[in-house]
Length: 253
Length: 218
Image 1 (spheres, each protein chain N blue to C red):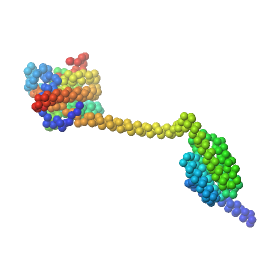
Image 2: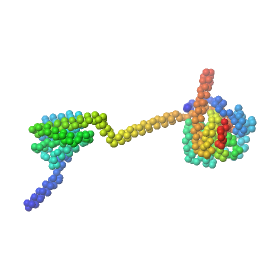
Image 3: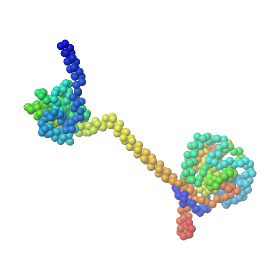
Image 4: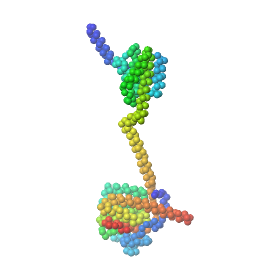
C-alpha cells in the first residue's frame, strides 16, 4: 500500500512537472517601464526611481535594460531564464536583464547580449560588462539596492560598449554604414528601388516624346488648292515624265 | 510644317503655275507644252485616243493594284505603316502602288496616264482624292517604273525629284524586292512632301506680303 502511494505521488509530481506553466509564457509582454515585479517586492519609491531612469535612458540608448523579480527560482536556472527573457523582450536589440529571486541569497543574476550591430563586441566583452555590473551590485548589502545598482551599472556598461562600437565605425570611415548597406539584401532592395524609379522616368519621357510627336504631327499639312492644269483630255492627271529603267547604268537626267 | 485644316476651308484657288516645278510633258511623245492643251501639238496625243488604244477597262485605283501578287500581305502590312504615316501627315495626299507586267512597247508613263484617268470614279470623295493621288507604276516584266500624279498634287512634286527617288531604289526593284523598294520610296516621298510644303508656305508668305503692301486682296 505504501509502495502504491509512493508510486502515485511520483506519478503526480511527474505530471505536475510536465504540465507546470513555463514562467516565460506567464510573463508575457515586456514591462512598459522595464521593471517586472508583480508581487511588489521592490519599494514603490525605488521601483519608480528605477523606472524613471529607464525611461530617461530610453531616449538616448538603443539597449534596453529589464529588471524581473520572481517569487522562486526557475527550474531551468535563473541565468538561463534571464537570457530567454532578454531575447523575448528586447527583440533583436542589445539588451540586459537583472533577474532577482525573492529570498535567494545568490540573487540577482545578470545576462546581456549584443544586437547584430554589436557583433564586433565579442562575447568576452559582454561577459566582462555583466561581471563588472554584478561586482558593483554585490558591493551593496541590501538586495533591493543590489538589484538597482546592478541594473544601472549594466546600463552604463552596455552604453559604453555601444558608444565604443560607434566610434570604431566612425573612425573606419563609415564601414558601419557599409556593413549595413553592404548586405546583399539591402543592395538588391536599393537596385530594385532605383530601377523602378528609372523605369517610371523612362516611361514618362517616352510618353512625353510620343505625345509631342503626335502633337507635332497634328492634323497634318494641307497644300494650297490650285487650279488644275488639265491637258490631253485627262480629267484627273496630265501624266508625268518620271521614268526609271532599273537596268540603266546612270539616271536619265 | 503644319497648318490648320480649318484655315484652308473656303480658300481661294491659287494659280498652279505659281507653284509648279515641272513642265507639262506629253505622255505620248514627251514634248513639253507651255500651256494646257487638249491634245499634243506634236503627236496629237490625247486621252481620248488612248482609250481607243487600251481596249479593256481600267481597274479601280486602290492603294495596291497588284494582280500578280508581287506584294504579299505581309509586305503590304509593313508598307501600310509608312503609307498611313504619310497620309496622316498630308491628309490630301493618297498613294497608289501598281505592279503589272507591261508590254515592252508600252511606256509606263503612258500607262500611268491612262490608268489614272480611265479608272472609274464612283464617288465624290474619290473625285476629291483622285487629284491628290500619286501613282507609282512598276513594270515587273521590263524592270521599269514611273510616277504619275494628279492635278492637285502636281505643282508640288517635280518629275526630277520623283525620278531621283525611283533611281535610289533601282537595285531593290531590279532584285524584285518590292517590299523594301516601295517602303523606301514612300519614306523618300514623305521627305519630298515635307520640303514641298515648306516651299509652298514660303511662296504663300511672299504672296501675303505682296498683297498686304498693295493694301488689296491677299
